[in-house]
Amino acid sequence: MDKITDKKNVNILIIEDEIAIAQGLVDLCEYKGYRGEFVQDGALGLQKALSGKYDLIILDLMLPGLDGFSVCNGIREKDREIPIIILSAKTSENDIIEGLNLGADDYISKPFSVEQLFARVQAVLRRSHKTVNPDEVLKIGDLEVRFRDFMGKKGNETLEFTRKEIEILQYLWTHCNRVIPRHELLQEVWGYENAEAVDTRTVDIHITKLRKKIEDDSSRPKYLTTLRGEGYQLNSLDEV
Ligand code: CA
Image (cartoon, rainbow, N blue to C red; front, side, top):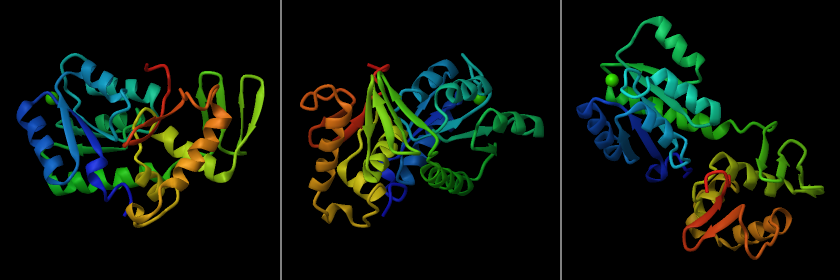
Protein backbone atom coordinates (compact mmCIF):
# COMPACT_ATOMS: atom_id res chain seq x y z
CA MET A 1 0.00 0.00 0.00
CA ASP A 2 1.48 3.38 -0.91
CA LYS A 3 0.52 6.80 0.26
CA ILE A 4 -1.85 7.27 -2.65
CA THR A 5 -3.97 4.32 -1.69
CA ASP A 6 -3.76 5.49 1.90
CA LYS A 7 -6.02 8.33 0.90
CA LYS A 8 -6.87 9.64 4.33
CA ASN A 9 -3.38 11.16 4.42
CA VAL A 10 -4.10 13.21 1.30
CA ASN A 11 -5.26 16.77 1.94
CA ILE A 12 -7.05 18.43 -0.94
CA LEU A 13 -7.61 22.19 -1.02
CA ILE A 14 -10.53 23.37 -3.13
CA ILE A 15 -10.43 27.01 -4.21
CA GLU A 16 -13.96 27.65 -5.45
CA ASP A 17 -16.33 30.53 -4.78
CA GLU A 18 -19.59 28.80 -5.62
CA ILE A 19 -20.58 27.39 -2.27
CA ALA A 20 -22.71 24.52 -3.63
CA ILE A 21 -19.82 23.23 -5.76
CA ALA A 22 -17.23 23.87 -3.05
CA GLN A 23 -19.16 22.03 -0.37
CA GLY A 24 -20.10 19.31 -2.85
CA LEU A 25 -16.43 18.75 -3.65
CA VAL A 26 -15.47 18.56 0.02
CA ASP A 27 -18.19 15.96 0.56
CA LEU A 28 -17.02 14.03 -2.50
CA CYS A 29 -13.42 14.10 -1.25
CA GLU A 30 -14.54 12.58 1.99
CA TYR A 31 -16.75 10.07 0.23
CA LYS A 32 -13.75 9.07 -1.89
CA GLY A 33 -11.60 8.74 1.23
CA TYR A 34 -9.52 11.95 0.96
CA ARG A 35 -9.56 14.96 3.23
CA GLY A 36 -11.03 18.06 1.64
CA GLU A 37 -11.25 21.70 2.62
CA PHE A 38 -12.46 24.72 0.67
CA VAL A 39 -11.81 28.43 0.50
CA GLN A 40 -13.91 30.85 -1.58
CA ASP A 41 -11.50 33.74 -2.12
CA GLY A 42 -8.58 33.61 -4.57
CA ALA A 43 -6.08 35.57 -2.47
CA LEU A 44 -6.86 33.50 0.61
CA GLY A 45 -6.66 30.37 -1.52
CA LEU A 46 -3.15 31.26 -2.67
CA GLN A 47 -2.04 31.85 0.89
CA LYS A 48 -3.44 28.50 2.00
CA ALA A 49 -2.07 26.65 -1.01
CA LEU A 50 1.44 27.77 0.00
CA SER A 51 1.04 26.75 3.64
CA GLY A 52 2.55 23.29 3.03
CA LYS A 53 -0.52 21.58 4.47
CA TYR A 54 -1.95 20.31 1.20
CA ASP A 55 -1.12 17.59 -1.31
CA LEU A 56 -3.29 18.75 -4.18
CA ILE A 57 -5.17 21.89 -5.23
CA ILE A 58 -8.44 21.98 -7.15
CA LEU A 59 -8.70 25.47 -8.57
CA ASP A 60 -11.59 27.40 -10.08
CA LEU A 61 -10.71 30.29 -12.43
CA MET A 62 -13.40 32.92 -11.91
CA LEU A 63 -12.86 33.89 -8.30
CA PRO A 64 -13.20 36.97 -6.12
CA GLY A 65 -10.02 38.42 -4.61
CA LEU A 66 -7.60 36.99 -7.16
CA ASP A 67 -8.48 35.10 -10.35
CA GLY A 68 -7.50 31.47 -10.75
CA PHE A 69 -4.74 32.10 -13.32
CA SER A 70 -3.02 34.48 -10.89
CA VAL A 71 -3.47 31.97 -8.07
CA CYS A 72 -1.91 29.23 -10.23
CA ASN A 73 0.97 31.52 -11.18
CA GLY A 74 1.47 32.54 -7.54
CA ILE A 75 1.59 28.94 -6.40
CA ARG A 76 4.12 27.98 -9.10
CA GLU A 77 6.43 30.88 -8.24
CA LYS A 78 6.99 29.29 -4.84
CA ASP A 79 6.06 25.63 -5.24
CA ARG A 80 6.81 23.63 -8.36
CA GLU A 81 5.69 20.31 -6.89
CA ILE A 82 2.16 20.58 -5.59
CA PRO A 83 -0.34 19.21 -8.11
CA ILE A 84 -2.94 21.69 -9.37
CA ILE A 85 -6.10 20.70 -11.21
CA ILE A 86 -8.04 23.57 -12.73
CA LEU A 87 -11.79 23.04 -12.68
CA SER A 88 -13.51 25.72 -14.67
CA ALA A 89 -16.52 26.76 -16.71
CA LYS A 90 -14.04 28.60 -18.97
CA THR A 91 -13.57 25.96 -21.61
CA SER A 92 -11.92 27.74 -24.54
CA GLU A 93 -8.70 26.24 -25.80
CA ASN A 94 -6.86 29.45 -24.94
CA ASP A 95 -7.94 29.21 -21.32
CA ILE A 96 -6.87 25.59 -21.15
CA ILE A 97 -3.49 26.36 -22.70
CA GLU A 98 -2.95 29.34 -20.42
CA GLY A 99 -3.75 27.20 -17.37
CA LEU A 100 -1.34 24.47 -18.41
CA ASN A 101 1.35 27.02 -19.33
CA LEU A 102 1.09 28.47 -15.85
CA GLY A 103 1.92 25.05 -14.47
CA ALA A 104 -1.43 23.40 -13.76
CA ASP A 105 -1.22 19.62 -14.03
CA ASP A 106 -4.64 19.13 -15.50
CA TYR A 107 -7.70 21.04 -16.64
CA ILE A 108 -11.27 19.85 -16.25
CA SER A 109 -14.29 21.62 -17.69
CA LYS A 110 -17.48 22.29 -15.79
CA PRO A 111 -19.92 20.64 -15.73
CA PHE A 112 -17.71 17.72 -14.76
CA SER A 113 -18.09 14.02 -14.13
CA VAL A 114 -17.25 13.08 -10.56
CA GLU A 115 -15.62 9.81 -11.61
CA GLN A 116 -13.49 11.58 -14.17
CA LEU A 117 -12.40 14.25 -11.69
CA PHE A 118 -11.28 11.70 -9.12
CA ALA A 119 -9.59 9.54 -11.73
CA ARG A 120 -7.53 12.64 -12.61
CA VAL A 121 -6.89 13.40 -8.94
CA GLN A 122 -5.54 9.87 -8.48
CA ALA A 123 -3.41 10.05 -11.62
CA VAL A 124 -1.95 13.46 -10.80
CA LEU A 125 -1.09 12.35 -7.26
CA ARG A 126 0.57 9.22 -8.53
CA ARG A 127 2.63 11.21 -11.01
CA SER A 128 3.64 13.84 -8.49
CA HIS A 129 5.07 11.18 -6.19
CA LYS A 130 7.19 9.69 -8.92
CA THR A 131 8.79 12.84 -10.25
CA VAL A 132 11.49 13.74 -7.80
CA ASN A 133 14.03 15.81 -9.67
CA PRO A 134 17.58 14.64 -8.85
CA ASP A 135 18.96 18.04 -9.89
CA GLU A 136 16.99 19.74 -7.19
CA VAL A 137 18.94 21.22 -4.30
CA LEU A 138 17.59 21.34 -0.76
CA LYS A 139 18.29 24.74 0.75
CA ILE A 140 17.31 25.71 4.26
CA GLY A 141 19.21 28.46 6.06
CA ASP A 142 22.93 27.68 5.75
CA LEU A 143 22.21 24.06 4.84
CA GLU A 144 22.47 22.86 1.25
CA VAL A 145 22.03 19.28 0.01
CA ARG A 146 22.55 18.16 -3.59
CA PHE A 147 20.52 15.04 -4.35
CA ARG A 148 22.45 14.26 -7.53
CA ASP A 149 25.87 13.51 -6.00
CA PHE A 150 24.85 12.92 -2.36
CA MET A 151 26.91 15.91 -1.23
CA GLY A 152 26.06 19.03 0.66
CA LYS A 153 27.38 21.76 2.87
CA LYS A 154 26.53 23.53 6.04
CA GLY A 155 28.21 26.91 6.16
CA ASN A 156 31.78 26.03 5.19
CA GLU A 157 31.56 22.41 6.23
CA THR A 158 31.26 19.75 3.49
CA LEU A 159 28.69 17.02 4.07
CA GLU A 160 28.47 13.53 2.59
CA PHE A 161 25.33 11.45 2.60
CA THR A 162 24.38 7.84 1.96
CA ARG A 163 21.83 6.92 -0.68
CA LYS A 164 19.20 6.18 1.95
CA GLU A 165 19.81 9.48 3.71
CA ILE A 166 19.38 11.27 0.40
CA GLU A 167 16.17 9.36 -0.33
CA ILE A 168 14.81 10.32 3.09
CA LEU A 169 15.75 13.97 2.63
CA GLN A 170 14.24 14.04 -0.86
CA TYR A 171 10.97 12.66 0.42
CA LEU A 172 10.85 15.07 3.36
CA TRP A 173 11.85 17.99 1.12
CA THR A 174 9.05 17.18 -1.34
CA HIS A 175 6.66 17.28 1.64
CA CYS A 176 8.36 20.12 3.47
CA ASN A 177 6.56 21.53 6.54
CA ARG A 178 4.32 18.49 6.79
CA VAL A 179 4.49 15.81 9.47
CA ILE A 180 5.47 12.50 7.89
CA PRO A 181 4.57 9.43 9.96
CA ARG A 182 7.27 6.75 10.27
CA HIS A 183 5.13 4.18 8.47
CA GLU A 184 4.80 6.55 5.52
CA LEU A 185 8.60 6.85 5.29
CA LEU A 186 8.84 3.07 5.45
CA GLN A 187 6.35 2.72 2.62
CA GLU A 188 7.64 5.50 0.40
CA VAL A 189 11.40 5.45 1.02
CA TRP A 190 11.96 1.80 1.94
CA GLY A 191 9.10 0.47 -0.16
CA TYR A 192 7.62 -1.75 2.53
CA GLU A 193 4.15 -2.94 1.61
CA ASN A 194 3.02 -3.56 5.14
CA ALA A 195 4.85 -0.80 6.98
CA GLU A 196 2.77 -1.07 10.14
CA ALA A 197 4.32 -4.47 10.82
CA VAL A 198 7.91 -3.25 10.40
CA ASP A 199 10.09 -2.11 13.26
CA THR A 200 10.20 1.67 12.99
CA ARG A 201 13.57 1.96 14.73
CA THR A 202 15.29 1.73 11.37
CA VAL A 203 13.71 5.10 10.54
CA ASP A 204 14.73 6.62 13.86
CA ILE A 205 18.31 5.46 13.42
CA HIS A 206 18.60 7.10 10.02
CA ILE A 207 17.04 10.29 11.29
CA THR A 208 19.52 10.40 14.16
CA LYS A 209 22.41 9.98 11.70
CA LEU A 210 21.00 12.70 9.49
CA ARG A 211 20.63 15.09 12.39
CA LYS A 212 24.27 14.65 13.35
CA LYS A 213 25.13 15.89 9.89
CA ILE A 214 22.67 18.69 9.30
CA GLU A 215 21.83 20.13 12.70
CA ASP A 216 23.86 22.62 14.77
CA ASP A 217 22.89 20.64 17.85
CA SER A 218 21.42 17.22 17.02
CA SER A 219 19.81 16.96 20.46
CA ARG A 220 17.87 20.16 19.75
CA PRO A 221 17.04 19.91 16.05
CA LYS A 222 15.54 22.82 14.15
CA TYR A 223 15.60 21.54 10.55
CA LEU A 224 14.40 18.00 11.09
CA THR A 225 12.06 17.89 14.04
CA THR A 226 10.12 15.09 15.72
CA LEU A 227 6.46 15.43 16.53
CA ARG A 228 6.11 12.96 19.34
CA GLY A 229 3.93 10.03 18.43
CA GLU A 230 3.27 11.47 14.98
CA GLY A 231 6.42 11.48 12.90
CA TYR A 232 9.10 13.71 11.44
CA GLN A 233 8.98 17.06 9.74
CA LEU A 234 11.49 18.97 7.64
CA ASN A 235 11.06 22.69 8.30
CA SER A 236 11.73 25.33 5.68
CA LEU A 237 12.23 27.81 8.59
CA ASP A 238 10.94 30.81 6.59
CA GLU A 239 7.47 29.73 7.67
CA VAL A 240 8.12 29.89 11.40
CA1 CA B 1 -16.23 30.72 -9.87
